[in-house]
Length: 85
Image (tube, rainbow, N blue to C red; front, top):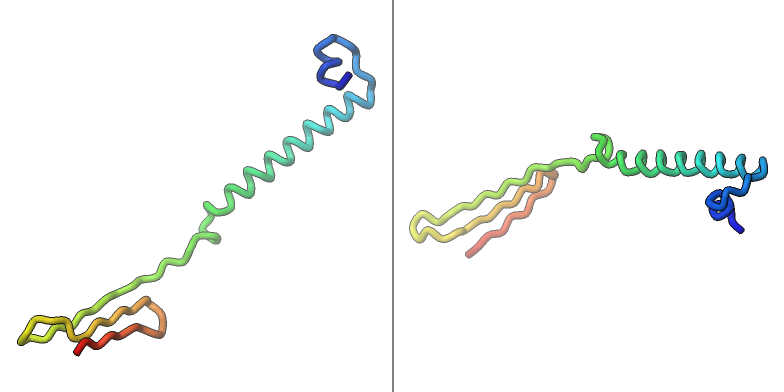
């Protein structure tokens, strides 16, 4: 008969079983504190993603109105330029 069934049946538990039940409760509380602590970490600013700015420029041919240059700047030292002919 397991401890849960013994408690339901009204059988008195031995001393070691009571201690084990208290230890089990303590371990459950530690586990729950760990789970809640780990899930709360991503909400802190130190784990937030860095935001970058991105800009896009277009140059048009004044005679035809077609795009001749496209520049994408992701906020890094390099940028992408595409020249259309």
